[in-house]
Length: 318
Picture 1 (cartoon, rainbow, N blue to C red):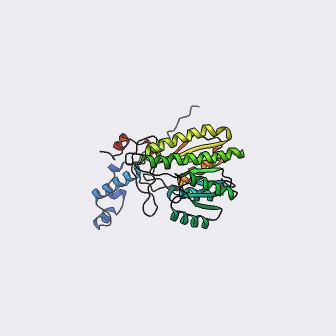
Picture 2: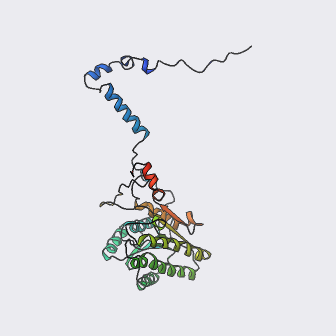
Picture 3: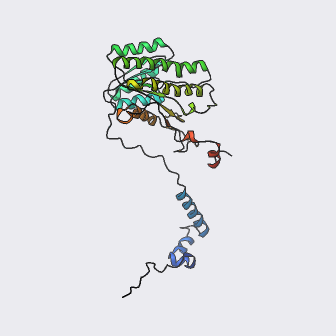
């Protein structure tokens, strides 16, 4: 016997255009008349605004991610962080300490050293802060000698120190030559001990593009990018990994909070310093980065992808 297929479609309800307002929403006219609800035109405007808000939501910044289960990624490691007195360097020191590393820090500012020493001591773990000028090789050698005398065998170096300026000599001395000397000295110790290690340089997205505000900055960071590649090749056979991080806009307000920056496509703000510090943990960790060397990780919210066409399309450049 032949079956007749029944349609799954049901009769559509009357369209809203053909249904009187009063029959759709009993009592709504009286509410409008009493001023409890806006009139028809006002209601349409509000509904339109609601639809636009739904289609283009202004999302708040995402909440801090849940801490990963493996929270002692650097247990037993001995780290040295340069330029740790404030900002990114301070966040790096805190994050390394939280992951179980013994952390030594340097900074050229005595007051910053004192404040950082007290801050890290309050967090627990093993830490030490030493005053040092990265441009003075005698200061660098003295720091390494002090750490050796204390029985600390470094296996993690974070070259964070850096300046932004117009003076090419000062810029290259601080951002390139000083860190290169320190890296060579630490690498020599690792090779002599036959120990593996990790070295991380803080560069900038401006290693690949001009920075018009301070004429010496971009060229020094371009040199840092090449240092990462050079040391990575030289030290790979000794199981020493060398990588870099290129932050985007890292400005903060007077309270240390991020600032709005429309040219950062993701989130539209500057980058919180702790996310750069966590990238250091990633590169320092054998768990994550055992086979990573010569790499440069951008932590910039997509800022380096931006150009004039992007700005025009976003209505930011007219």
